[in-house]
Length: 123
Image (cartoon, rainbow, N blue to C red):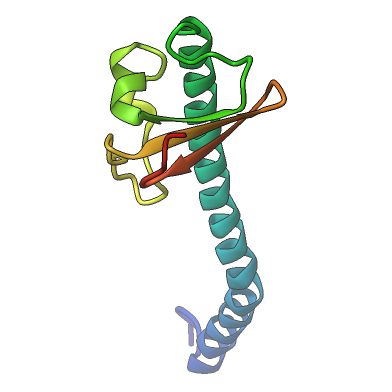
C-alpha cells in the first residue's frame, strides 16, 4: 500500500516545533520593533532641533544669542520658514505632529539648547 501524505503525529510534531521556534523568536522581534519606534522618535526630534537651529540662525535679529534668554517657536513657524518639511513631522504611529507644538530655545552663556514642548514660557 502506498503512503500518501503525513501522519497526524508527524504533523503535530512539526506544529510543536514551529510553536517553540515562534516562542523563542517573538520576544526579540517585539524588542526590535520597540527600538525602531524609539529610533523614529529620535530622528524626528533631531529634524525638529536642526530646523529650529537653522531658523534661529537665519533670524538672529529676532533671536539674539548674546544674552541669556528663552524663546518659543512653534513648529508651524519653522515649517512656514521652510526649515523643515511638514511631511517629516510624524510620530511613531504615523500621525502628523501638531504644528502648534513649540520648540523651546534656551540660551545660557552663549550656548543653545532645544527642547520640544506643548507649551513654554518666553523670558
